Image 1 (cartoon, rainbow, N blue to C red):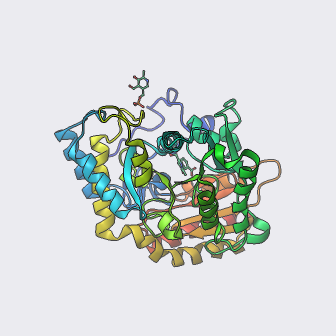
Image 2: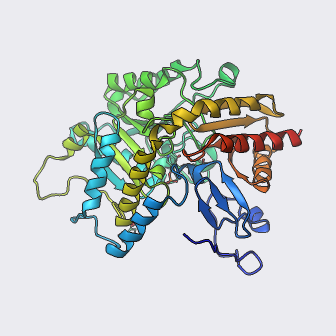
Image 3: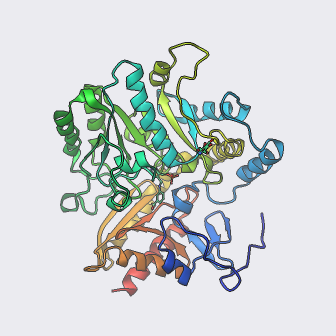
Length: 445
Ligand code: PXG
Ligand code: PLP
């Protein structure tokens, strides 16, 4: 691991060519926020300033940064075999990893299809759902149902079923045949809930409304995040996911959980399906699968969904889908090193152990200026702030900037602050993370 990070700063580095993703480019380039090194719970800037990582990179570095087993696995694999074609060819680590994944997956999820990101996992799951129905002779089931405020990545399928207006409105007509159930966010009844909110299970019945409108015979699947992250940490009301599962079963609709954020220990269980006791038919995963170290995603499928494709002549491809970098050797090696690290340190359940302390720390922010809600589950926290009139998002973004100045990295979406620290977090880091947010809010009063 280098202790001599790249020290080039804006004086010597041209920032012009790089068009940054999901970033206010002009603001950034006037006052860049650079990271140069990472280890454990921390980043360091090129100048050597230490910054506490309050968001596990971007909800992905669940075991913390620069973990030796993962680093070694990637280094060794790069030297041994850099690439292997995934179509018609295999390599042992791809099979070993799939086996290891289904051992921790929710009951009944027994097949793994590899992608390179959460967005690709979503596209893959949506295509699987439509093709599954067609393969079993119900080709009229093509409609996809998402949820308002949902985030399912940025590709066309994902933004079509997604429900974040800014991510959709610039991009034309999107996929045809998509509809949305209502979101579950309800501050009037559920503000400052600890863990899942009490009210709103009946919002799952909105799916019955869409079945009434479109007829079940046209609906392939419903996709939801068990806990919505990107849109501002929205938790499912008590009983909501089970109710959604029941309605799907009643109408032969597949239930897809997008566990890109909730997967790999974020809620204190390996996956949210286990945490809530609700098993979907397909799951989209990414991020924590490699601890964020090499891009990788996956879709988990139930056995019967896979088996439905396994008809027809045996020399023919069963599912016309895949990516050049599906099951990339570096990603598989990184994922195996990641699963070893999670297992050795009990990280897939550690979030549950740390959650009560995190919850108490977060809810102490109730007294801070501008705070209109605090939400938490496992090692996810959301602090919703009263927007500045006429400037939505500004209050939270200013808090983000000031926390960065004070050595703490958080994330904001709209006027909600999100925290999702590495699962190796200790109490003193929680104190620093939440304490810094409190100080910044108090200073802004
Ligand atoms: N589904 C969910 C539920 C996600 O959270 C994706 C799909 C897409 O994954 P990729 O790997 O294509 O980015 C995500 C990603 C944020 C933030 O602001 C969250 C994500 C990505 C970027 C920012 O909290 N989640
Ligand atoms: N575009 C072209 C011209 C290609 O040849 C390919 C893959 O062969 C792709 C896009 C898709 O790239 P990927 O498989 O990395 O998603």
